[in-house]
Image (tube, rainbow, N blue to C red; front, side):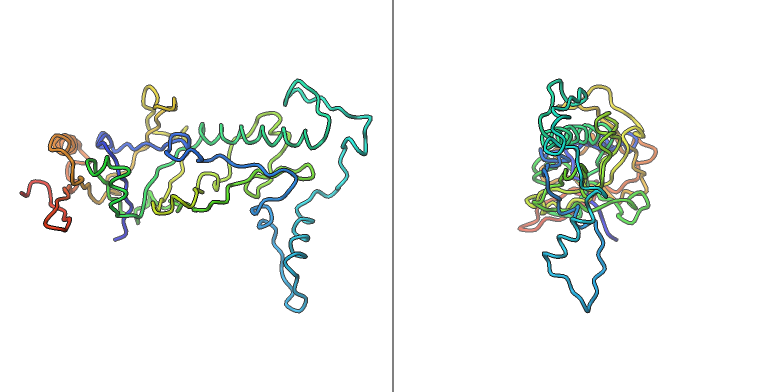
Length: 306
């Protein structure tokens, strides 16, 4: 059986099987879901979004292929109402961006890209929750996320239907880009309507924004489930340390294989969790284990067995 793991320092999920789906800003990587901006050039995702069928008898060089991709990415008309061709129309005033007028089209494009970045980050944190799991059954995960081995780990059946949409995190030091070139704006290779940005009507973000992390996190082997926060089963009163609401989603008991307590988990912590499980109609029969050192080895002992 394939497992997914959730390391934690509490057992509150035993109250109704409710787990937090966290906003990107609530996660421990400060770079979560914050795209970078490239001005007047195409991003890697932009170029990759163009399909080119190669003729094996007339192969394209890498440089020619790049130029072809850039040509196909551009607008039908390359003529822009800029300050060079139409100087009488400039400066341009656009109060939806700022009170001061714009002197150049490049300055105008940059301002729209900056606004898009702000709106995308806001949308990601107001609309989407992330349930972070891992395929790593590893000591460093106990140290990082289970209170230095004093917490617990929930083992899920990875084949359960509730994990059908689980997606592995992509680890790369290449950020997700907002690109702006020739009047077009794209995010992760997907074109966005500039009018919608000016009217602050961004209502979604590319999934890749929520699924890419820097390469230094690759050892965590993270798998994510994304959810619409408006569909949360419960919103906890108050907020977390970031000021964000705590949105909880129910994970069915049938998806849980077992709960394992860490090497340093206290008796009171284990007893509290066991009582909570016994008082739950769904969780009373969940298998529970505690990790123990036997010589140089770590073993798992079922609760209730000395």
